[in-house]
Amino acid sequence: MIGIRHSILWPITSVFGFSLLAGAWAAGPAPAPPLARPTGAIAAAGVVTDEQYGWLTEKARQITASVRLKYEDGTVVYTPGGYVGLWPRDCYYLVHGVPQFVPAEDIRNIVRLVLRYQRPDGMVPKNVGLRGAGYVCWGPPPEADSAQFVVLLTHEYYRRTSDRAFVKENLLRLKRAMDSMPRSELGLVWINPEAPHTPYGFTDNVVKTGNELFCSLLYWEASRRMAEMAKAVDEKATEEDFLARAALIEKNLASLWDENSGMYMAASEACRQIDVWGSAYMVYIRFPDAPKRRRVCRYLVEHYAQVVYAGQVRHLPLGQYWENWQGWRNWPEWKDRHVKPFAKDTYQNGAYWGTASGWVAYAIAQVDPVLASKMLGDMIDYYRRFDAYECVNRTGYRKCPRYAASVANPLSAIRRLREEGKGEADH
Image (cartoon, rainbow, N blue to C red; front, side, top):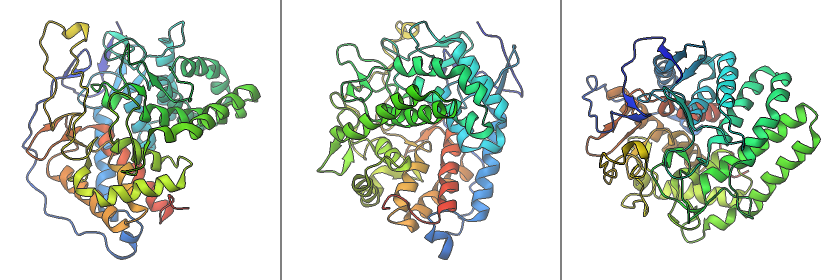
């Protein structure tokens, strides 16, 4: 077991990494007065006012400080907020979204910590917590996004430092991690319908099978980062390998496209349903298919009321729910606890999340920047009135306050929109 102590006072809110705040309600501070909406040049860029941006940045600084943890070996990690331990996906969202608050040295040490638990078959853990490392939330390992986020964390460190020695030291281990992710002949991340397991971590209760959209997009993104890092250390064969992996995904991602809706499906078999998050993320990472990016952007504008509430985003359009739902019922630690699947319109089955707000706002800004500004302003208004929760719904449900990804991901998108000043998806 890894010993751990908090760098600041921190309530123990998690057992086996499962938040005990799942049903928490919070009155929050007194309601803040409504803020003026961006107008003129600011609205045309699809962003927020300087005052709103400053408030959200300060909120992110406070949350980053509150989720900072130090293990007994001296490694500093960053928790999601409301969960105790390191989850590389949440950590990546934080260090990428608010790089000014996380030293590069911490990212390097986090990568080393995760790779310390790499299995002989190349698999890396989904989290490193109080009781060691976990490799999957439910079902057989691996968790289908674990390798991608370790690569993205490594690239974030390299991007900041140009530390080629660190890349060279770990490139083979990262390749082995990427090799451990199951993929179909299409190059997409594959979840065996006969032995399903955890997909993308922010849908880790959803039983998606077949080719899975979000993890495939992450695999494309991570493959390009692997190629870039391999080139930096003159590993030509590895560079070409990962460029080919990315190209195969580019060729075949359309197998998950639904022409009628103009959106991508979450998976090819179980849960072949409109994936709001994954489709928006495809736009955000500029996946190379401009006509489909444009259609996704238009869908999000035209169906705004079905996917957005208080600036936060549902996984599926309003009124739709995942057809296969796990609810941790097969987790050994919980098998005798009669854990019920999460109710409709809560958690991953219909609640609204700030984690995806930046991606959706960015996509909307490509065709309706004023609506994107309104969305981000509504999100900030909600955070000021209540808090930055992991997820919320329309009837008062709020889970896990001070949630890091809920501020970090929107800040990353806002920063990009401010820098671009106009949309990219239609170019």
